[in-house]
Amino acid sequence: MRVWLVMTMIEITDVAAEVLKGNMTEGKVVRMILAATDVTGANYVLAWGDPAEDDVVYESNGIKVHMNPEDAEILGESPTIIDYVDTEELGRGFLIQGPESDACGCDHDHGHEHEH
Image 1 (cartoon, one colour):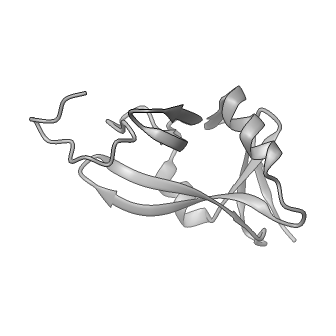
Image 2 (image 1 turned 45 degrees about the vertical axis):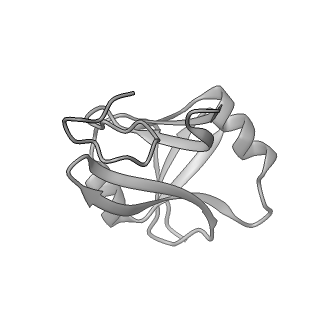
């Protein structure tokens, strides 16, 4: 199996790394998958999955994140932060945010009238 290991680009916060480590499943890897693209940019999700031969692998905070090459290419060289939130406003879950993202985790349309 050929796996590309990339040391930068994705930063996993301490909280997110702790949650991921606590939920690891033997034989599975953390996969970041392109879910959609829209006016706010690319939207990614995390899932447990199987490693693939041509995966691009990012490592941060002791966690390896696997992506297929096409999704990794869209991610580009922009730093991306994976955090874990547990708030009344946003709920509980992972928040994936790139530098050009207006992502707030609220699932609302990010038009001109959107406020936090």
